[in-house]
Length: 222
Ligand SMILES: C[S@@+](CC[C@H](N)C(=O)[O-])C[C@H]1O[C@@H](n2cnc3c(N)ncnc32)[C@H](O)[C@@H]1O
Image (cartoon, rainbow, N blue to C red; front, side, top):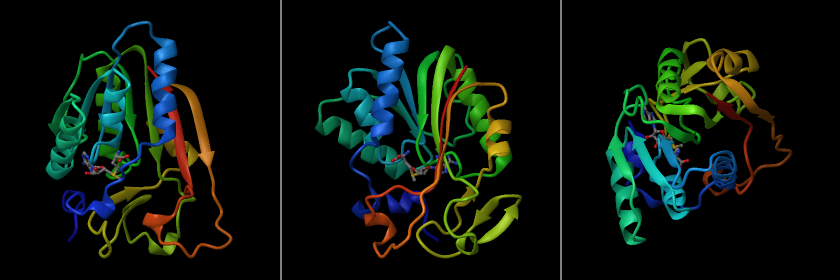
């Protein structure tokens, strides 16, 4: 059973370029808060592309992920560029940074990898770790994402686990709009985008495809 920890030992599963959305989110934080450096948490940072970006942009970066190999890769990537960040191997439900007063937290393509109770717990922890007015940017799977017949076994409403492929054994929770609004009921919604991409023809494999897939993109504020 492949896990993300195993995937991060294979270069083909390591994204080397940051999402432009994350760069723009940091710019929003820069225009919202006068403090420098800003403190920004890359929540479920994977192999570190956004932790490196945040540090490169001159801010105090923290990164956490359940994958030790991901964190090790992030550490080496930072060191090879003369950069620093505070890194922890941790589950998304761990109460790592309560009271830390982050200006921003980003979680790209990761928070949906759990059951809904654990996702709720993770979001509460993020809330407790932000300063007043601090923002959280998240991308999440949409009930309209991908082919429903390829999601695997439904272990609770809208949470699926596949038994084959590179993400076998990893839960994926798919959100509808009500699910998103419930998840962020204690937050102010700054931006909620239902990004729906319809492929007319698609004969490029997932990992090489330059185009986006259907997702929720969300910015919420404490
Ligand atoms: C698709 S990768 C995205 C990584 C990174 N955010 C990026 O954009 O490159 C999903 C990440 O979620 C992490 N993850 C999955 N379940 C987790 C959990 N329970 N706690 C913390 N991290 C988890 C995986 O280890 C993996 O790094």
